[in-house]
Image (cartoon, rainbow, N blue to C red; front, side):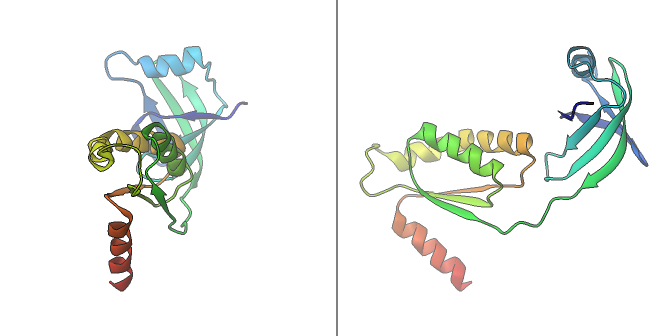
Length: 172
């Protein structure tokens, strides 16, 4: 038996049985899992929920190209973690993408990015705010892959405004 991680749509749930279905028209996802990955009865599979770090350990009871029937063995609830914040001076954007991905996987609670006084990037704050959507896509992909909780991304034009925000949040 090989451990395997599946991401799919849970179609039915009854007491201790789950059904993971492929796409409604083609069932290509289940077909790929059964034929290409060669999933068989008896395999252990861990299901991850996108909205939390909750995991369900299951065993394959039956599989076909259209559905996979899983028996629930245990449920692992997310642990309460200490909220950690990373404060970071703006690096190169490619490096920032990698940082967002990795700190999401490490399950930090938030990142605060500020533009340094002597940054070499021209108009860095406006360029960074324009790329927030890209950073959120990277964050969401990392959350799905790792089963991590939410990561809040905040951007500040300079260190002074970041420190001011921190001071006001400590007072309140």
